[in-house]
Figure 1 (cartoon, rainbow, N blue to C red):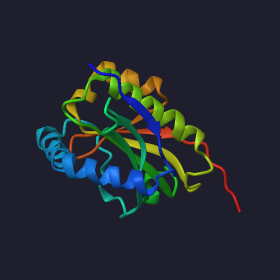
Figure 2: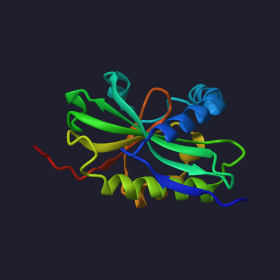
Figure 3: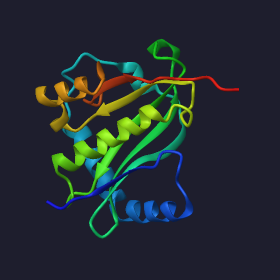
Amino acid sequence: MTESHIEFVFGQVNDQLKGELKVFWKQHGKAYQEELRSFRSASSNGHGVVEQMDLLKKPILRQPAAISRDQLGAINGIVFVVLRELEASLELGSHAYFQRMYIDQESRHFALTNKLFRVFLQGFDRAVEQRDHRAKVLLAENINPGLQIASMRRYFSRLGFQMLGGNRLGGEVWSKKLETRFCF
């Protein structure tokens, strides 16, 4: 297990980082999509259902929020957020950020995943001024079956998330309240 360097990059993406992210997604985008498909097809519908999550409006903005780099400086993991408008029936406000994370297979281990996720959460909590003030919550759709076990549920709860329920794809939907400030 090698040490990775973690950076919070939300709202700070320059041209160099954009290029590095393009390289990362060119190398890992197909594996990421295949992994999402495999989790969705393996999931069952045994949960209480948050059906409205499946009726979300189109994404407004997708942006990287935190990255990890291997010993050579190449990006090997990313947390990104997607700002979306929500249906009023969800009673979560008009907008929310959705969080996703991907770490390449060769670098993936709990210590890196935990460190990357915690750096993301700490930075995102502090980035009140950079976030869209309309988003009152951060949502995580945990479709990886490995995240749907008791110990991981306790982990998310300790990090300030509350489980809202499941969706029809078999994912668990978790919510974390965000501090907001309205600025003129």
